Image 1 (tube, one colour):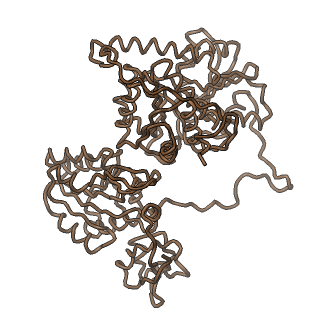
Image 2: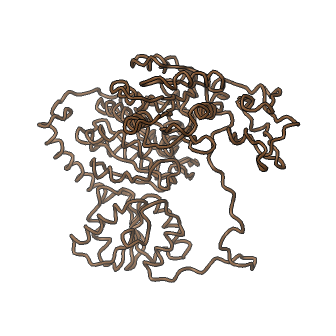
Image 3: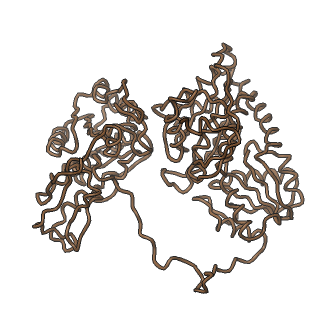
Length: 628
């Protein structure tokens, strides 16, 4: 039976993840080409397209990085295809070079960039606000707040882009991507086959003589988009009064809940700004006229707030504008209903609400009686990265500086592994590691995953060879893009949909760069891994250790790999980390299958992956038959 994302009939209502709703919106618009580099919180969008691709009427690809993904989709739209490219917020930094030119060139077939921002750094190294890219690049920007809007705005963005011939930004945040909500389906469009690229150098080749008029056309297009924003169904006014609230993104959902809980719905004038750029200035002028106070709700930077202050000054409007600048609301992290409610009450001059009381008559509820236990992140049981880190630290200990990268293996920062000393961005372990080694003459070991290596590590390694840097690079090849959900990369031989017949081997690629000091090992074989590291340790120049072993979670699904044995602690083991008599297994590996049972080491047979790394560390750990 076909998936409802593909085959759902108009008028049906389904419960969709926000990211799934985006997929449906693209299908309803008649999407023809999709490319991406996976990154949380956007990953389910391309993963869903990938899963549905055998039945879908679109072309889909996982590109090697965001810049390539945007360029591929950019080429597709120039050839007339309705195109979507998806990535997380920091990926737009990688794609910014072609993006800021594509807005000049335009998108004849239609082109939408999904930027999934991450307030709160749930799975990211920063909280950047990509609405600013809309301003820099000249991108109309839509911001959904519900699953229904995620579907509707995706469709609207693609259709608007096709009409304007200009790229559009769909800006989501983690809470929108990962919420679930009812979505009423619309009619799916079937577009004609792309007409192909139509030669017109003055429009499509941005040499300086052509780029100057391209910029003027972009500014004209933004004014057309502003006119659309003035009457957009995604910009709605409700309520009345002299206190107003303008909200964008998920803040609109928090505001709706705060008004409902405080029984203030209708007593405050509200502008839900879903089509947030270019600003609908006439709509805003009418909204702000007559207000005494305006509260602006937006996560992260005061983008709207500053623009509204400037607009009010230009229009000669006299009102108090509250938001981040007076310090009422933060420029970091996520909002929530309580935070929005507090800001709303302050704008209205109302006292803070009384503490909630339990209906049973007990004391007011202010907090849990005891804090919930934390669940710190950790490498999975059986993860080959742990084995690599253990071996590297046995050889180098704290004498080396460890340059890390973006992936599961960044968790090597945690003790006892302690194998991540600094990190900048995707691919930086090579380049930044080389710089650190060159500047101070220190021993540097860099760690990079296979997907990240293909993403942006290769160029750093080329640079290292060319500039004769001195670094040991460890490529952690677990045969998948594990952190974001096991998406394929050029180096995999299996995907979730079957074999990959065109695998790009890492070793010959590295050798082709002119590097001769290369060793390839299975890190779960500690003896061989230690020997290889010893051989590379004191050699000069660029050396590469390839640690190849599939991610056990992916291997079970893709390779049918079964656990044939599990580890256990011998009955006569005297280990008791609590009293300091031993604990080497805990202090060296920290495998999540380990635990203390009345002060003695034990291994949970359910969590044990059967990798047998621990048997190579401690003679008191044994193996028995597993459940294959």
